[in-house]
Length: 190
Image (tube, rainbow, N blue to C red):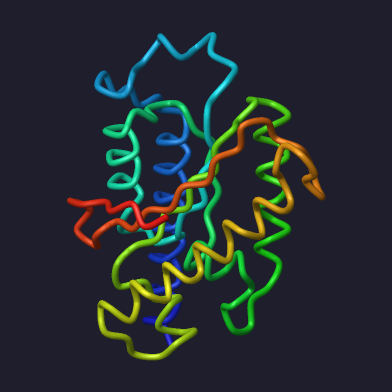
């Protein structure tokens, strides 16, 4: 019995130490000189809004690729599993990503006057595996092209400049890309 009491008190001590450590770290300001960009401080417009997969492996890679295409600090972003797959409500058991992203597009236009929607798919997407089972690389690419085409068609109906059913966005363009799983390449597929 005494060993159990001893173990509990050690656990409490460790927990208190962790709590103190976490509180200290919360108040620490981290500065990254390579991230610091004061040129964007007064900017209140951007050209685009993106819909990207939620996959954690590609956060930096997508930003890097979009930066290299000229979109550095020039887009708002939304995430959904499988990107256009989720937007089209083709992810079994999960719906509502279309309304979620439609709202992001409305806010992005209202606040930042976007006129471009960029959909970014990626290789070896787990959401596509859930929706379609095991796929070859070509099968996955074909499904991604189909889903991007469908999502783009729907988005154009909702946001086109002439008779958009949700909002009219002047000069609206929709682009679709697929990034490699290692982040090195991004192919325009729409």
